[in-house]
Length: 287
Image (tube, rainbow, N blue to C red; front, side):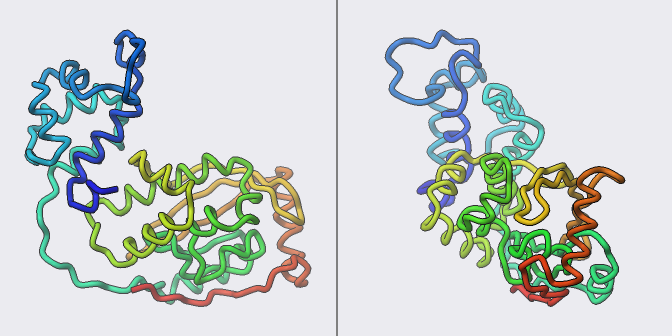
């Protein structure tokens, strides 16, 4: 993380992605005595059509203004997808910014009303995956969706949350990559600094994933979870931006087995039989 701390985010990203590309993937012979994981610097330079010295300057932060053509060539060599390529271009385009006024994340009153009326699990999260508000169905689905919790912290540090996700490894990789995407050039945001620092100290899994510099969006999708009361649930996830926060909803296919189980969960939540306290739609303001 030294390059990131010193402000050389472009160099850190290039090196991390270089180490993830095998010679075979790049069309090169594997060789019998490779001392570095992935590609060597000179191999990346050769494949991208630039000089090894220039590529070295990019990785070490001595040249922070590469052309779009050079970045496109590096994206091709490093096998970046569209999201990763856009992120790379953004790193090179980043310029010193004027200090931004910090505005607390706040859940509008109309969203609280919407949460109260939705019969499916729904909650509001901030940019750092802080749960700002949730309805009773969300808490019945997972007590880690109470206001005040952080979804990424729970996922990495709470054993019950690990058991909840059938594919915990994929979930953690997706969340960490999405956090890096969300942070973008907002690296001086106190909330991001606090969360990344906490997880870097307390989670080896986070340190491993953070060092990969993966970036991706975490918008819609389908997930399978293992609820301790009703069992396996296959749920779709949609994320809807509302002002400065995100409304997240989970819902099953209509008349599916998961639909029936979710209705059972709703009945149990109504009677207080899920084993979790219901927090309603309390509001947490994050500055």
